[in-house]
Image 1 (tube, rainbow, N blue to C red):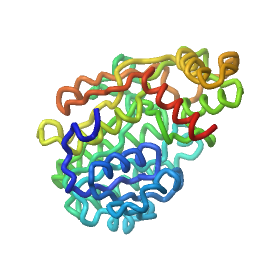
Image 2: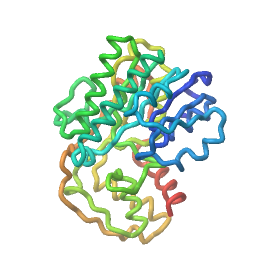
Image 3: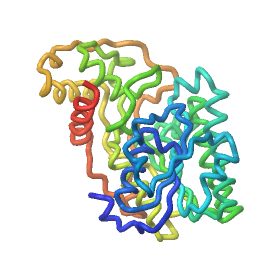
Image 4: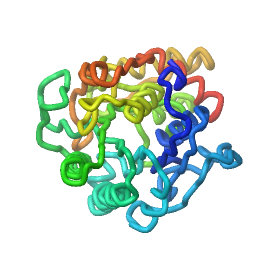
Amino acid sequence: MSIMDINLDPNKSILITGGAGFIGSNLCESLLKNGNVVTCLDNFATGKRENIAHLLPNPKFKLIEGDIRNLEDCQKACEGVDFILHQAALGSVPRSINDPITSNAVNVSGFLNMLVAARDAKVKRFVYAASSSTYGDSKGLPKVEDVIGKPLSPYAITKYVNELYAEIFSKTYGLETIGLRYFNVFGRKQDPNGAYAAVIPKFVMQLMSHESPIINGDGSYSRDFTYIDNVVQMNLRAIHTTNKDAINTVYNVAYGERTDLKQLVGLLKEYLSEFDPRIAEVEVNYGPNRQGDVPHSLASIDKAKTLLGYDPQFNIEKGLKEAVKWYWKNLK
């Protein structure tokens, strides 16, 4: 399914915060292909200039180097904008445990700045990256939007507060909001480097270097791994919908299947060994569970299918094959 199938109005102007990041840069590309005017707001704390370098010559693309913790930067970015896709945040549970103050400043204060700027600029709709971490210690599987538990990390608290603020701005100021609870997104442009790298690109880089990946725990922890193109589709549907029942709420963004870490490494070794047969022989090591980690994560995507017409095209196998090809081409 391409963006063209959603029939998104190319005349709409869209702001993507965190537009130089992994998810944000993929959104920028898709919307520019559709003909939209796109503004990217990024402070390059975690975003990469190379993710958007090829977009800079496009006359419909504007880069604002700024920080969502600065209200004036948010106000400048919101000028003349129809829709906002708010992706800017400091991700990672371990990062938030190590430095809760900065995570809160970006994810809560920055989020509030963006809501205020969107309200004042009379933006039509504010679509924001929420998180599956909001489910916290909720035991039930699959995760259903209206049943959550207590947060297990500072990061999870910040993402839950985002949902509360969005709901208040919808009720109090009439700003249309849609929250997208991302479940373990992966794919092209996801950074494999750094202390807080996500598990898939990190494992890919280790395997490509014939290093043993370290699985936290015994490998039985499972996740609903979600390919980037499914996430892009969901964001575009959230902008496009005219269904009043579909706004001012939150959705799971996932594929709806779970894969444990042992299975994940097995698939990565299988797909990478097509490029380098020696990778099949790389051994896997096991370490302690990470603090704040949820044992199992699986989403119900029924609400997104029913209200937004969400139709994810990439399961874990199809998505990993695409991701592995991209990493091998771009990072080898």
